[in-house]
Image (cartoon, rainbow, N blue to C red; front, side):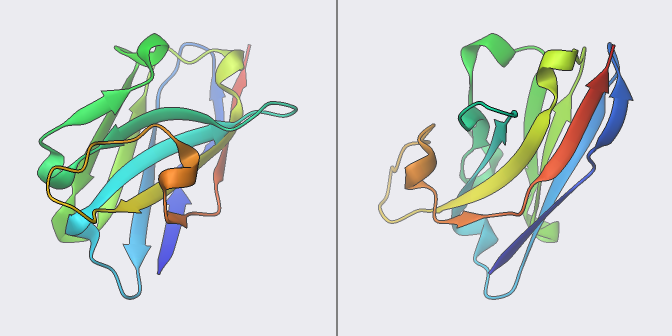
Length: 128
């Protein structure tokens, strides 16, 4: 299983960017909860957003609601993170992750250690 994140780069403050994360290999993408995390220099990895099966439910870090939107396209094995009103504080490496659903009704988690597969990360740099 490989998760390939893309879409990062240099963006000006106030701008927007959409990150993509495509899964390949022996994937059961439609049966995975997908999440986005980020890690800024010198800081711990933090949860941003996650999306459940079929996109029927989402979970966001409270402070990011309204600025970030997560979505998925199971036909393309891809999850997206649309980010807007960016500030230099959003500068970080952004990671996608997959959490295999093991039980009916499994809830979406914001805990990094509950995710099974991780992408390599894509760097977003927001200039002031």
